[in-house]
Image (cartoon, rainbow, N blue to C red; front, side, top):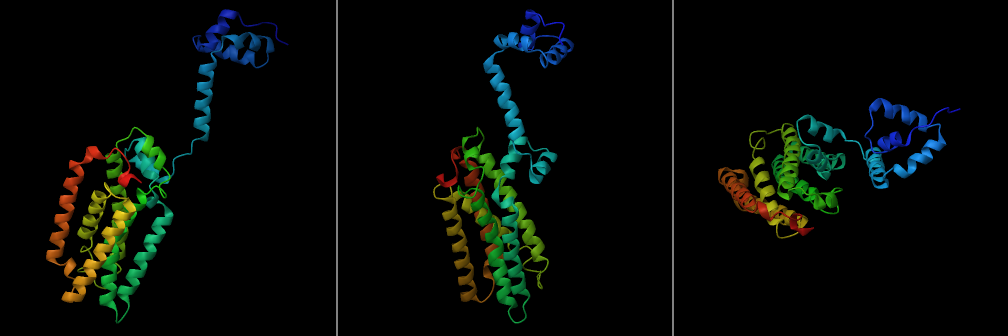
Length: 275
């Protein structure tokens, strides 16, 4: 049985977190078994502060823990909010990586098939630069981005988010394509010929997505790329789009598109293409 009760002044200090730690610990232990002191404490407790504390507890308990990608990003020094927004990028997830790996595997097998190596190599060079474009489209499409509403409402620079996610998508995709390129029977041309077109197509997609839906921009750029490469192949009879002139053209597109993106960085106050 309790033989003592907490004084009113001590209870008020405890309720307002103004007492000494040792005293508050003793009061808290006493309150667990003393209904009279709990009843005396209730009027001194600020309900608003109590609700805020409870909300913080609930948020901390219910908040999902960081995944593998988010933990790795934090380890390299990225801030927690940036790491979470970047980790939510759909094209950094297993489903996208599996789909990309399947497309690359098909292209590699086609390029390695006897009697169809030229067509297989062309297929690989067609697919490789388009994959980063598809990844960027998925990363900013409302229907695929699980953090769309959060990113839209957060006081966060949309241009910075654009750069972070685009860089992550391009880096992961290019790494996968580079590994696939090592499996090709002829590595001389394909080892790096797709890289500049990939950067050009991706940067051009981001520029166009300022005015139209990002998925539509990606489809237009990817479709135009396929038509241009196939037309040059049919007309000239060689991989002209990946020769010196084609590479210089892709470099020029990438540079001009990057300049346009940086020049209009203050206009990225909403989602790409308004989707």
